[in-house]
Every structure is written in C-alpha cells, then in structure tokens.
Length: 151
Image (cartoon, rainbow, N blue to C red):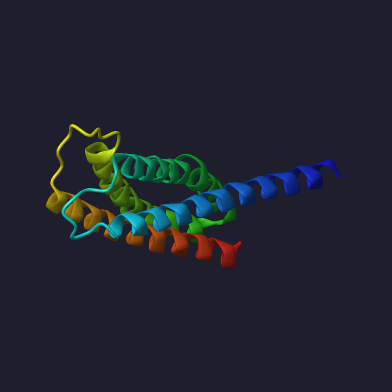
C-alpha cells in the first residue's frame, strides 16, 4: 500500500509542477501580448513592465529546463525508446528558443530610465522573441501530447 500511495503522490507532484509551469507559460503569453501593444509606438513601455515580463519569461524557461523537462526525460527513459527519441529530436529546437529568450532578457531586463533603447530595435527584438515563444509552445505541446497519449 505504501508504494501505491507514494506513486500517487509522485504523480500529483508531477501534475502540479506541469500545471504551474503551463500557468506560467500562459502568463508569459499574456504579458507578451501587452508588450506587443506598444509596437510601432514612439516610446518604449515602462521599465517596470519590461522587467516584470523578463522575470516571468526567465522563470518559465528555467522551470521548463530544470523541472519539467527533467521529469519528462525521466518518464521517457522509463516509458520507452520512442519517447526518448522524441525528446532528443525536440530538445535542440527548444534550446534554440532559450537562446532567443536569454538574448532578449540580457538586452532589456533591469533596464533603467537612463538607458536609451531604440524603439525600432525593441520592436524587432520583440518580434523575434514572439516567434521563438510560438515555436517553443508548439514543441512543448507536441512533447506533452505525445507523452500523454503514450503513457
């Protein structure tokens, strides 16, 4: 009985971690859309808004890499070669999106009022980031859906 309880608790923890991570992902998308509303404007959004977005974005990406993907990798190893092959195929593309996130964060996180950033550059960087987020969401959903149907 102890094993069944332990297994149930482990599954609940996994589900909670994934649910929290997906909620954070939704928050990133909402915040991204709000920042996108500033596109083609003459002035950057408030530093507080950009910094808050960068904080949530980095938290989401970090949770994916250090919690969720680790758990998925463990599940893949347990559940067979097809799953681990899928993870190995998708992970390099997911990592490329991480590079875009880190680049954006380095440029715009913790900006202060004295730092001049070009609105044109911000629009371009935000667009590149949006494409990376969309690709990442698609890859993550593919991975999650495949694992749900197979396991």
